[in-house]
Length: 400
Image (cartoon, rainbow, N blue to C red; front, side, top):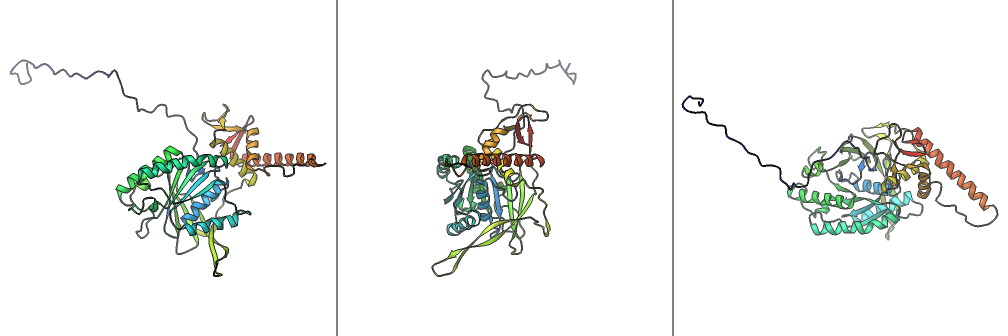
């Protein structure tokens, strides 16, 4: 009977479901995610590789000096703000104040290079690509690919592209417009994905009083892999650098720098031509009277060996480390003998023996030079081991 007792029980409705299709589309399900890939950095703990990293601050915060310093130090595999670099090449796109930027380059070379020669791993490009024009983006990607062999030949693989500034790269359109932010961010992702470089646009903060966010729509911050904010307070020469965002890492790290005036000569009227260079400060950005303790330093040999190992990791010469106790399955490193040769090639204790003549005594002098170089490498590697920068086992060495 039916529930109300008025008639026979109605049979239940039979539900049928279609069987599995014989032709299934390709699966988008992720596989085993337990493996851990090594984090790759251009600037250790600050600028990841193959990323979109925003550099922002108010006018006068010295964003361009900051970007130029990073590019130059990276090309020379020298520390930047005390952080190790991998020895990377940079394409620095200048969209405004080209004359002023030229003076900044000249000032940097005057202070840092006795020959005032441009590092081969840095190329200055006048003009920035139009991120809102698909054809311009495609042409820019092709330009990056064309330049890569030159950077490789210079020993500094092209890994960073600076866009100075973001407003120039969107041709004066409003960064607060979602219709602008979306296509521009897609263009940045396209450049990053197709070329494998880190894209670093320089941008202004919001105009609101006390604002500490990137100017424009929130998508600029949401899509960033890392954000670096530069602050200058009360007209002081001191700048504070804050890592305000870092994907999968702890953010909030702070550094400090100031600008130093450099005289470049006189113009036709006899007036001085000047610019500035960035100088890292070892003080607490929030309390200038408190000195920062950056810990023991590796020294020049240790820094050179670290740069050589980073270079081997970047260009594929590093190999899988054998299964030593406590070693992750994905860990890569180098044989000590290979790392020694890579350090020599990078310039450890001079690249070549300067006197190649066959005069008496030269063979002995050359062998002495080789022995000093071997000892320099040994001391540098021992220092890295003492500071827990690397681990050595069975003739292998790798970063901890």
